[in-house]
Amino acid sequence: MPSLKDAFYVPMQEYFHLTNGEIGNAMSVNSIVTTIGFFLSIYFSDRLPRRFTMSFSLIATGLLGIYLSTMPGYWGILFVWALFGVTCDMLNWPVLLKSVSLLGDNTQQGRLFGFFETGRGIVDTIIAFSALAVFTWFGSDYFGFRAAIIFYSAIAIVVGVVIMFVLKESPEEQVVKQECSEEKADKPGMGSVLKNKTVWLIAFSVFFVYAVYCGLTFFIPFLRNIYALPIALVGAYGIINQYCLKMVGGPIGGLIADKVLKSPSKYLFYTFIVSAIALVGLILLPHEHMPVYLGMACTLLFGAVIFTQRAVFFAPIGEAGISEKNTGAAMALGSFIGYAPAMFCYSLYGYILDHNAGLIGYQIVFGLMAVFACAGIIVSGLLMRNIRATRQSELVESV
Image (cartoon, rainbow, N blue to C red; front, side):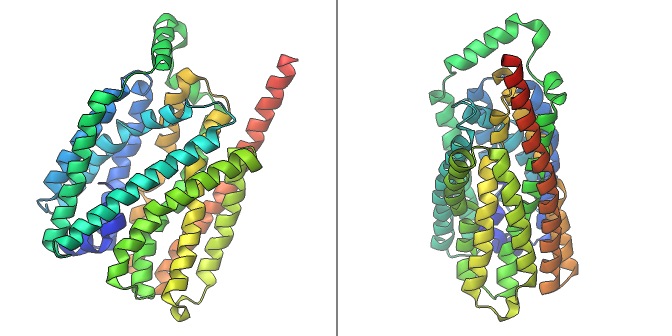
């Protein structure tokens, strides 16, 4: 639901009566609430039962979607996207990431998160294309858009109810809870995590990946306005750009990080370099004289690189050997810092496009994305060195 723009960017503009900047503002409001929520989730992500938080988050999201289908005004849309930050992210995301991380040891983190992204991509693609089919079935107009929103809402509510009954607490969670209650002097959560330099470097690596990722949304109006992408392909491109690439990027990024480089942090370092070079290329390409399918290919290839990064950008938490009882708090802090670009990048990119007509606006956006990628090279390089130094220190101590 918060990613409605990915498949329905143009209908959102038309039927919600929104500009690029106003869509960006909705995403930024969502991200402000999400970021504050991630900070709060540091305290409960290792304590509350997953079954209740995840189930409640989905059902509440579905109910918000039903309200959204009434086509509220601009302020109503900002209100809904703000609440999405609570229901979709604060209550759900850190707990979900912790669940994935605990499925394997520190040599398997890239693969675990890679295939997790693949699974998400498969589900996202099926649901999004189904919603697009509903939109088309009801006439590809105002009523079709409302029907698609109701479809999304119904799916969220049904899955939330199912999770309430089928998701059980694992034996590992019970052990961790028992240890937490017995070891009062060493509580899981904020204290030890805030003192860990590696966690902060991981968080800022995520930050710069996400700052670049935010720009992928604007490839949709870029192709529409500069390449005159047919309206029939806009929704399909948005789904491929945001969902299908997860299926490709997830396993590729995870397997390269684990099997080839044997380090997710090293993989982030190299792909930041690739991203920066690719963005410079996007700025210099003669887009106004290129065929539309070549433009689509260029943007999708770049998006694939970013999704390989997204697949593994939390994997260094496992690589760094963060203790299990602090994993949830580390994921929450990483999310708090890492997803912060969404608070301002969507609005910033949208503002630039609204005030710089034509190709020049997109070139400025690509330039800013390149700056973020270059900053990511520096941070991921420091992270790689920090993890290597920590491992060498642990090896010396064991000897």
